[in-house]
Image 1 (cartoon, rainbow, N blue to C red):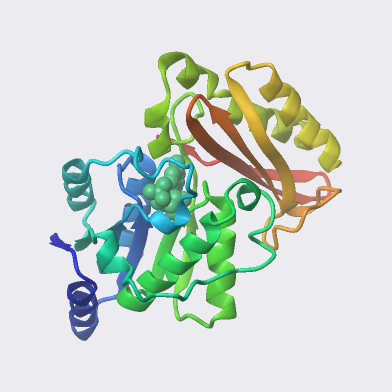
Image 2 (cartoon, protein in one colour):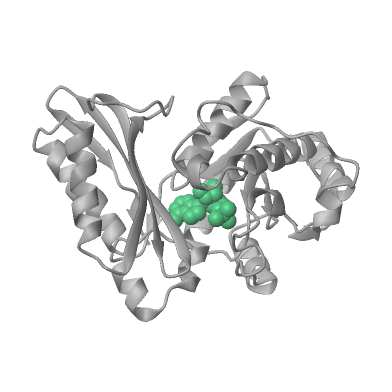
Length: 294
Ligand code: AMP
């Protein structure tokens, strides 16, 4: 595995890979790798020949009062993990490398960025859309892999790729969870022992909502209420939102039908955690995608 720090080196390495007839895959990350990140690298490795993993804690996707400075970092452990997963190139640029002082262009995806995480984090999704567009332009991947854990981010990226005719296939990979159900997240490092135990309520709330739907409930209000009740019983966890949305357009829905996303965000101590389940509902049949356990 090569580690690269400049856009020019990365572009050239990808051009050389394509000249050798290799398919280039991309896994964008902010580092501090866990099994969720590693599952994306493996998914990329399974379908492409030259896997590029990018590690950049992107300042433009953090608000002024957010955890940019505190965000966990461990580049040497990340380097070892990426190499172990068969990554061809790890890209670790500085902020100055990614954003020249004269840059004034951003990518804004309308509608899908409204509500959910877009409400509490107004600049976040524009920051994501902009950096991912830049990485697509530098790497030129045929496939890019993103986790379904960040469901709104994935929907934004799918939309921008479609709207801007970008020649990349976007793949959403399953949520990887701890054995007790907590979705893996770099931000779980912020949790104290009691908070860590309490944080499992996010998964339990989604599982309870799923059971309700499997049992026949179709009202978004009822299903959302179930999530609220479950989280309210855990005093260390403060629910920020629960939203029931169309699985692809992310428009709010009143009645659950077709592919539906139930997404939540909550504060647990200093950590802001997100989680979701996708339900595919056809008549009485409900297929739930709650992800996999590590
Ligand atoms: P991050 O480093 O948190 O920006 O995440 C980088 C990529 O890993 C994003 O596509 C995330 O959706 C994905 N990811 C983060 N956590 C998980 C998880 N628990 N399971 C699957 N993918 C994840």
